[in-house]
Amino acid sequence: MPSPASDPAYPVGLRLTGRRVVVLGGGQVAQRRLPALIAAGADVQLISPSATPSVEAMADTGEITWHRRRYEDGDLADAWYVLVATQNRDANTRASAEAETRRVWCVRSDDADAATAWTPATGHSAGVTVAVLTTDAQGRDPRHTAAIRDAVVEGLRDGTLVARHHRARAASVALVGGGPGDPDLITVRGRRLLAEADVVIADRLGPRDLLAELPPHVEVIDAAKIPYGRFMAQEAINQALIDHARAGRTVVRLKGGDPFVFGRGMEEAEALVEAGIPYTVVPGISSSISVPGAAGIPVTHRGVAHEFTVVSGHVAPDDERSLVDWAALAALRGTLVVLMGVDKIGRIAQTLIAHGRAADTPVALVQEGTTAAQRRVDATLATVAETVVREGVRPPAVIVIGEVVRVGPDAPVAPGQHPVT
Ligand SMILES: C[S@@+](CC[C@H](N)C(=O)[O-])C[C@H]1O[C@@H](n2cnc3c(N)ncnc32)[C@H](O)[C@@H]1O
Image (cartoon, rainbow, N blue to C red; front, side):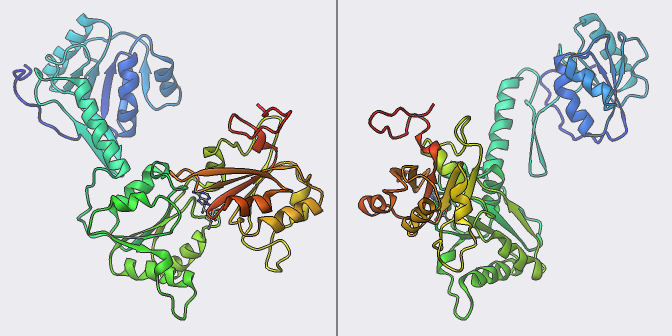
């Protein structure tokens, strides 16, 4: 007999690999529960005359074995666990009676009181399973348990719920792309790693606001202020990553945008490999796409631009260190996105015009995109140099060159023109 409804359930984790689990009924309940049973490696035997298309697909791929018939007495022989979820209450009652006789733990979708086991609301985060059960049958409130589960999993994922590791961990570094600046635009993984860090070495660009939320014991180092003496600044940053990791600290290198888009992320990764320190890379939302988007500019648009090219403008086109073929870029009709180009935009615009790009090609400069200070300044290739000076545009800014600048409701409308929609 099931225990009295007031007795609390005893929580446990079942290890079902290769063990026979019988599921009765192939409807929505089975559809929701089967993936976790499959993930646990259970030998799932589904007994049901019909099944939802998703459940059928699991049978088709061999993840479960489907017996297309109704439940019969004896079906629970050799089972370790049974999920009773048919539409037929009489069949459910007979099956749970058989489970009781055979001493098989039995979940019933139609009657929690009659069940000998309850399924908790579960979620996963970074190798941990969170399972929430109501204390007793009388207090059962599945929506409330699901809400608690969501709150815990969400908090662990986004780092607002911090559960530090206490097992000694090997030295490691995470190169985390922090996105363009808005703290909501870091990835879930990036935020979680940040919450677990002992040391954060951060760039000026990126989600600086997140640093203020870190607990006081976390050492936050401004990458631009690491003294570099006889080293290059980047070498000093690499060395700081290595030194902190070797001291047994969990290190996050928080970078603006994506670590591998003009971010020198691979130089850091190579230095770590050379030092024998394991690292992980967490991609970030690059400013090259997100900052134009935040200012209402799509880098591609059907019928307007079928390509976009992201270029560094940190050296001028006539500088011998430049690796950019500006003449070839001038010949393209798609979108050009220039990063680090505010200082050189006059010479860049001249070069593009000299190689055939129309002087009235629209240009937009988006400064401090996705932050509270974001602003957009519009110009053309012919006017951009003097516009930058007149408007006092300063880095960081993303410069977008091409017809996409005229797309959308935020586009400037020249007299007699209409935005492209
Ligand atoms: C060294 S690059 C790093 C790019 C970064 N890894 C990325 O993927 O966005 C720095 C340049 O990115 C651009 N940038 C980064 N964040 C920006 C933002 N929030 N607003 C405007 N431009 C930004 C500017 O052109 C800036 O000079």
